[in-house]
Picture 1: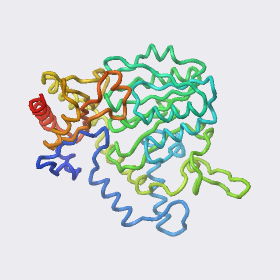
Picture 2: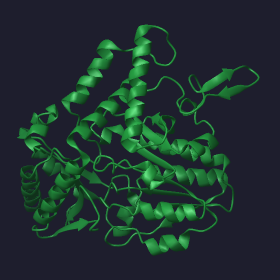
Picture 3: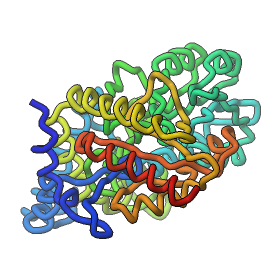
Picture 4: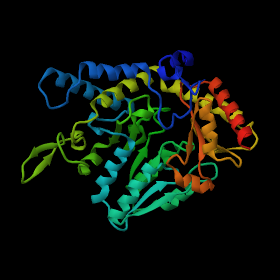
Length: 404
């Protein structure tokens, strides 16, 4: 049975106070909190297994290597990748995207098109702009509508035989919109284009099946999934990963080195140069174990209930506007109070112990579309409660009264 009060006991930080008030943490889209089980896994590694991996014959190195590769297998199983070597452990979503963008530098030319969406995080815009500058390819953008949804008829018009790559987030970090990635993947594959899906905002809430999606690349950060910062995953189909050149050179990614020539290691090590975030990789696996113990169906149902409740409560406040009103969304409410800057609202909420995000959320094109400087963003996780939402609503009312 899903019991939020029992779950909250797993998260030490939720019992602390901020500015003399009980912490209400609604910045989950930026990073999730970490349960004691995951914290214990970090301590366990450094207390008992701390050694470099893949290179040592001594016991600690062998044990650390086994734990690291077991984590890779957990990640493979969670996302249902066909092979464990299709899971590349990176420093996070941004690193994963840049790895792919760098790899395609030798595969694109002038006259090729790549497509992104208007709902993207900067990390899924800037690397592709840089790629276009290097190759002469053209960047095209799927537009959005007032509800914060992609205009799919425009996507149908944009895609052509010249399209080589399509990049879309699974869920918008700024608006919570769930994008129709199944349709996007299918249409892209009809013209032979590869697809990368930014799953950073999706994976805390749903459990993607990369084989069922038939996606070419899928990227994730552990710290959005109750895991540590500084580690993430690039899933890539074996055929695509074999086509791409290494992103970085160094130890671990080689087969043989001479001063005349270097040959590269097989997957996944070809893309994992240097000493990795060993503890992070191992603990990423522990975080996935924790979330699967709760169950993603239960998480999704509970978070959708929170979203519905919060939406109704916030809309009772005069002058409050929510941005991103798609019926197909999850766990994020971006809003503003009329004539009040979002930063000012966020500052007052912080005085009340309520953590929200304010600003453009690394999605400036979305804010430009709405002609606003930014929003107040409240993002929910399975350890949040309706009582906390009530506190948020009262806090917003107080901010309105103080700032009007």
